[in-house]
Length: 91
Image 1 (cartoon, rainbow, N blue to C red):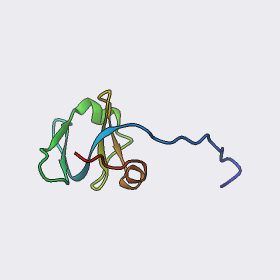
Image 2 (image 1 turned 90 degrees about the vertical axis):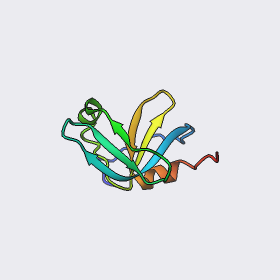
Image 3 (image 1 turned 135 degrees about the horizontal axis):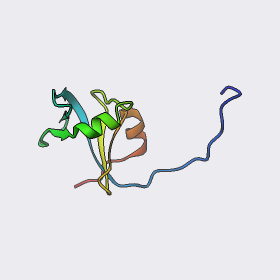
Image 4 (image 1 turned 90 degrees about the horizontal axis):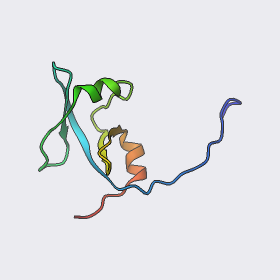
């Protein structure tokens, strides 16, 4: 840690989310993004162009997770961070 690092308060996640690991990403010409899930039995998910443009700094890669929160907010998470913070709920 360098001298400019600030120690932030710690938080533990207690949210329930929906998520799929990303097998492939297809960047569509109209600006949307098609996510091909790694898990069998789930159809590809098309992410709106507005979302892709708004969250351009958080560009997902294969192996990351597509995450949807209870309020409908969608996000992407690197696999290591997601797998450390969430455990799959059976069912």
